[in-house]
Amino acid sequence: MEIVGSIVAGGSDYLIIREKKGSSLELGELLAVEDGDKKYLYVVSSIEYKSILDENRLYTSAGTIIEGINPKLEIPEDDLKLFRKVTLVPLLEVLNNNIYRAPRSIPSFLSKVRRIESSDFSFLEIPKNRIFLGKIRSGSKALDLNYYMNGEEMLSHHVIIAAQTGRGKSNMVKVMLWEIMNYSNFGILILDVHNEYFGYGTQKGLKDHPRADKALVYYSKSPPPGQNKLVVNLKSIEPEDLLGIIELSEPQKDAINIFARDYKREWLKELLREDPERDKEFKKIHASTLRALRRKLGNLFRIRILEDGEPYCEDDVFCFEGAGETTISDIADALEGGKVVIIDGSTIPDETGLIIMSAVMREVFNRYERYKNEGLLRDKVQIGVVLEEAPRILGELYDKNIFGRIAREGRKFKIGLIAVTQMASVIPDEILANIGTKIIMGNEMQKERRKLIENSPQDLSAYNYIIAGLEKGESIVTSIFSKFPVPIYTPLFDDIATKRADKFEPVFF
Image (tube, rainbow, N blue to C red; front, top):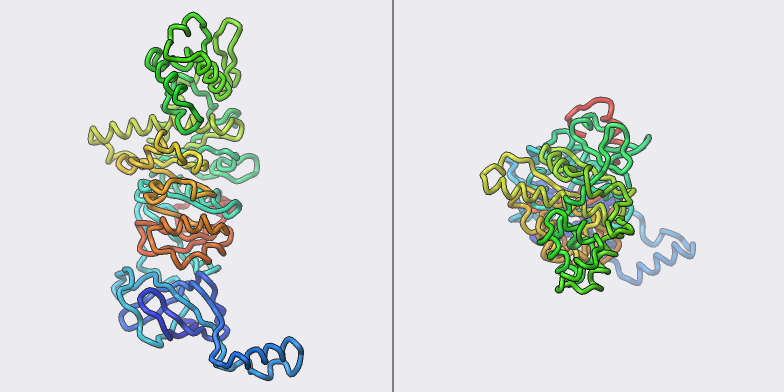
């Protein structure tokens, strides 16, 4: 056991230690203190120089070094009057019988402090229906210890993965999905905007998983052999699927509701069909409102109006007749079957993909609501939806769409959100505070760090600079299902896929 310091001050909310020379502690490093039948775990929150020498002597000594006059003679390197003061904040108190809890006491004065070891976390159990998030990390060093969360708990109470660009958000999601595909315990829907999750050519992706043929479903405008062509019949789209995705004025919403009431599943086709005589009958809809709405929806669904006034789908993703009538329900079936479903969003506009996602989740929500009423929900798999456009979808209009409804009510129906974002501050407090698990990656923006710290399940008030200094792949997991904020390192997805692509082995990474 490597001793790195001794307790000299502090209390229940923090401890001060004098660092042993040469220990080179760093922010975020985990330390342990053993005291009788108890063990205390701490994290380094700040480091500063201290001296009990006269200040003038320090300046004189610095001058001898800088100016090259008798350098280092004024104060020897091993002088005990110079040291580093390290502040620790508490994580856990562990009893001999492996019961762990929030600290209720403090170790003895002048107790020795040592570096953490993997065995110090022997109290952690591998949960049923687990999801692998990464390896427990102490500062910049990853321990040989995997960290899992109970996927059903985590997904049902929503997850946010927050970081600036390039810090590993997408890598984290891919690693989670790879583990989920091992067991098919969860149905996950994701819109692959950058075509990075499925993988293409020699690029590793979820297509390389040993169980991809059983656990993965892929929809694309131009699918590879064996995958599904993305075609959605517009009869499957309901007015609520547009809310919060595109901006609609109140008169435009009223017009949509009128057509939906009169034409049911044909509402979109009839709204876009130009018939001057019929249009005059809609006295509550102003002509300019109808023109603007037709232009907006026409652009959204790539629909052109022919000379006879009939709407025509120019893009083969949507159609009015024939193909695609079961696409939405087929995707919902796959999710119920515990599969990961990827919709290729790289060749379609963002709004198009989001509306398809909205239609699918509306179908899933309606089914699960019915299952709950019938007493069948207990036997259904937990479902999650990955939102890489989280601030946009969960912004001001969140309460108007299906994603907002999931955010508010989803946990009652085994449906959860996995929100991925650079801008957590844009998400309303009502939603952010109710997201049960937050995976916080590096972020230099003070505003974003403050928002996440204020809405975290554990007290992260001392983690401001720790979060700012997190490197790619490093994160802090704070959850209502954990008694302490867990620092982790998530391996590169390519490494995981390469190591396990040859043979499926449901073992630890």
